[in-house]
Image 1 (tube, rainbow, N blue to C red):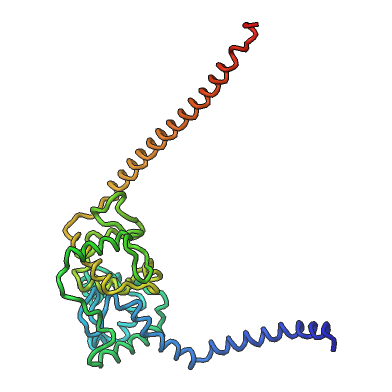
Image 2 (image 1 turned 45 degrees about the vertical axis):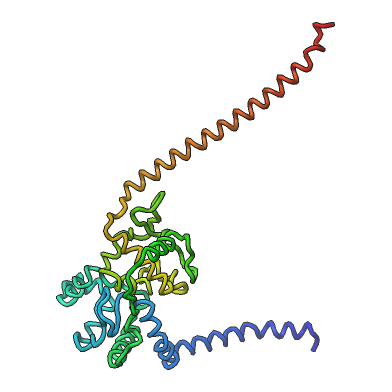
Length: 303
């Protein structure tokens, strides 16, 4: 068989090979054993990414309740429904959901992407298994009790402003958030003002736990692969604690500041360009005058 015939034969077989490959991949997705095993292995990672910022298992309350033995406090079906649609259960007026909502300082549990019924059942199995352990892996971050120092607050300010880079390459807080007392425009507006965040989250432990795994849709993709280090969390919390007594920055004041800075910058640029143009214009005129003066003795009137 010639090389040309071989090439044609291979080209005829290529669609068949691709079809068989697609069928194999579809079969792997369909098999319940493989799918279930992968999901089970992923459950602790899912809990670690989406739940530990608000919950512990045996480590005490954070923003949300401690989940140790939660299946002994409430029926499994109720917990599953709440995890699937927490906002809907709260809005329905359910007494237990309203109680949780009030105890969480009216911070609702968000509807999480990928929270399927199968995922919920595996999470409940995980919580039940971890509750039986003497010390769960999700007991939570052990927060340092050492007093904050001026150096801690100063380093936290540098991290917030981006003057000091985060070790894992995360984005500086000021890119999305503001805090009262910062220079110039005071920070970004994509996220909420953090002047009172220490007070809103009720102190050091809850705020530190939140920074371990931020649970908002905006922050999750950023800090999933670039988590904060414990010492960075410590100094940032020190910085936020120092601002807890201040009033949040007013958006109206910041807009006026932005407008005034824009006007000042515009006037400065106009003045600079005007000065440069005058110098250029004077230089051109001087050259013309000198050229005219040099030619004047040779004018026709002198002959």
